[in-house]
Length: 224
Ligand SMILES: [Mg+2]
Image (cartoon, rainbow, N blue to C red):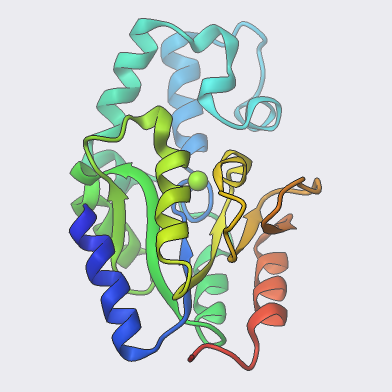
């Protein structure tokens, strides 16, 4: 909701805090692992790939050519809005420890996710269950369609960049949507290639690499 973004921004401004935001899906939760294993059973696996190989090959369900059908879209829409599904997602190995370690160097001030507003409850339950910090959760409002998730997220990041100076996120599609004036840093989780961008993008192949990159970038800062 817009009011969530405004209140996050003004409270950071008031306390003079500079911090970073966290994405959730594929950064903290292994959502694709859960989805792909269910989707292989429900919608077929003509290449006979293991779930892990399929993730390696396609990364996201919208890249899997034989899953682009109305039936699949309908199933996805139900999962996206299910609080129960969010609570069942596996946590990514090292994410909890990594986030809490980072929090000692620069405050984690928000979760910024393209998940819809409707799954705030399930998402909060999951974050608490897995030991992540209790900070504001910014979710995608109903007037933004899922396909515009990265565009919306990039716009939010630009809007709050004076106090939210970076994000840990897995999606190179987000980087493409950042405007040229964006001054923050994107720590691109689970990514090894270099990214062509006017923004500072640091590819981090695992959570240990994220922790190292964030600490080396921000040690000694945190307050304005
Ligand atoms: Mg993500």
